[in-house]
Image 1 (cartoon, rainbow, N blue to C red):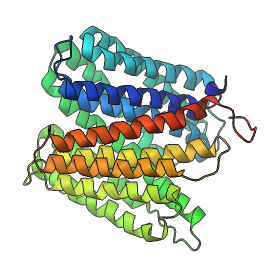
Image 2 (cartoon, rainbow, N blue to C red):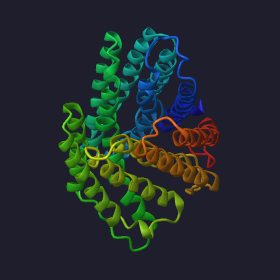
Image 3 (cartoon, rainbow, N blue to C red):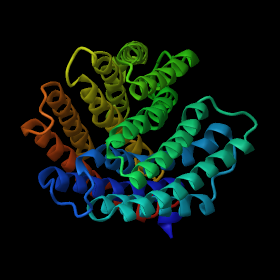
Length: 387
């Protein structure tokens, strides 16, 4: 079966399905907030559903493809990635549906998802154990995925004890300690690498210190959130903005805007210093903390997801390494959605016309991107090669 022939196929297909379901869920919850039969506070589930459903399966589609290449080991076997993807798909669907129906279904979904997540982590650990030398960026991805599992275990406790006030905190910790390190690691490794391969005379710049500083910033933001230390959040945010801003400039985006498949990586990374700056301002500017998270989620995560998934999908299906005009248009729409949502947070319109517009734009981007990309994972490579 073609779909199961490579980890990126099965996990990217999983991500397409869960992303679409999660966005539909948010549209229903946002427009009809009283639609739940479960009695759970649906608005407080929003960051969990979006983070887990829209983004997380793509982590493994990418990392299960790149870990063996980073460390020159054998490819990951289907006995790892097929059940891991299936369990994560089933778990996310049960979690999303359970928020509308029953906390019992949410609990079962979390357990199933954790099983799939743990099996996927075990696959990556197996690669690391085979490697003669551990790649630097493993230290920003593998521990983050393990932390993600531990935070999800804590979420199980919240659901069991119905301590809904902790949903937001755990979701933000999951974003800062799991998602941000993964995206930072991929950015630090791949953006200068791809730029060097395209731009003649490109000045390659990828200092290890910047990688560790960015990870420390994510940890500082998480500790500041957990301990409610506003000044720690501000300091970590300033350092995040300064370090990622320095990298953004040193990576010479002005030379890398064409082709758009490369330019989209630089545009996406530019959202990281903006998110750090907004978080740094949060003790003094109402809405800046929320704006920073949406700059991360829609701007940084969303842009990098489209850029990297398009690249991997085209490169591993025998298609030209270009971003088609339709995907470029979706990428631009995503930027508008992100700007609109950040502006809504800064102006205190958590529910209002700007938020509604951002949601509609993001929903359109996800729907049209899924329609374009999902069929590719079900078809053989155009060049006749395996994988």
